[in-house]
Amino acid sequence: MSYETLRIERRDKGVAWLIIDHPPANAISERLMEELEKAADELEADSKVRVIVIASAHPKTFLAGADLKDMIQRGTQLAGNEAGIAEQSARMQRCFDRFAAMPKPVIAAINGYALGGGCELALACDFRLMGGGNIGLTEVSLGLIPGAGGTQRLTRLVGRAKATELIFLARRLDPQEALALGLVHRVAPPERLEEEAAAFAEQLSEGAVRAMGLAKRAIYAAEGLGEDGFGIEAASFAATFKTGEPAIGLAAFFQKKQPQFLRETEG
Ligand code: COA
Image 1 (cartoon, rainbow, N blue to C red):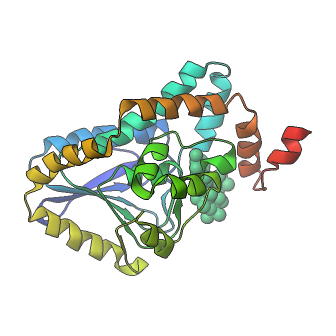
Image 2: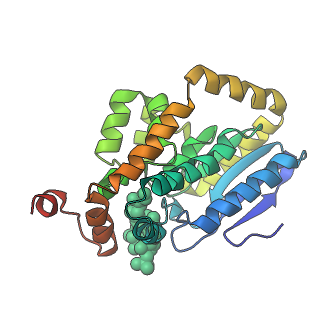
């Protein structure tokens, strides 16, 4: 199978690396989402693949989140169409859910920025190993909210108090802070991340990966991650477009300025 935005490498001991290569920032465009889903189908169907590692081809960035250029375009096309915007959010949720529901272990090897949707994809994986950069749900700094499962998965992982702080303040955590919060499982020096991720993936691969896949379903059930929360997230994501805040946040991002929500909203 051929891809434009990623590649799959089958390495030793049944470990497949899904390496995202979508310059300049590995932003999650429609094309990347389609290919992530295609890759998930391919990796799930291949019985020789026992463990999946998601990584980036770019040294500074894991994934910089939703493609903000696409978002501005779609926000304009879908202006006033709240159901259409909510569907965009649900679309990203479904894409990342392919990895959350994958019946084999999935590891995110986070080498650099994992922001917004990049953090949400990592949260949909079973394990997060971090070698550098920052991780966080940064959407509120743009006048948006996380719309790809982040409000649900981060809250389950770190608890409501911490999730509220991280989401409201759009915190970008360094590896040690993320480790202390339990947001990532392990930290490695940047130059050793790939090696450590490979060793961990091989360790998992030597185990009963089918049992792990089944345990995963039961673990999710214990978390009570239900459809409702994801549906509310998508509807709330769409509602942000009525607030006027994304227009301020997104324009400021591309002008490389700090957004002035107070000044511009209160006139
Ligand atoms: N969507 C679309 N383009 C993006 C992007 C995104 N999410 N993130 C970065 N880019 C683009 C930038 O516009 C820039 O393009 P340009 O070279 O045409 O100007 C290029 O990628 C490099 O980004 P830049 O900000 O110049 O690099 P940096 O090294 O200073 O910072 C990041 C990298 C990832 C920290 C920074 O780009 C960033 O904060 N991105 C937004 C992350 C975010 O909040 N995502 C949540 C989305 S909901």
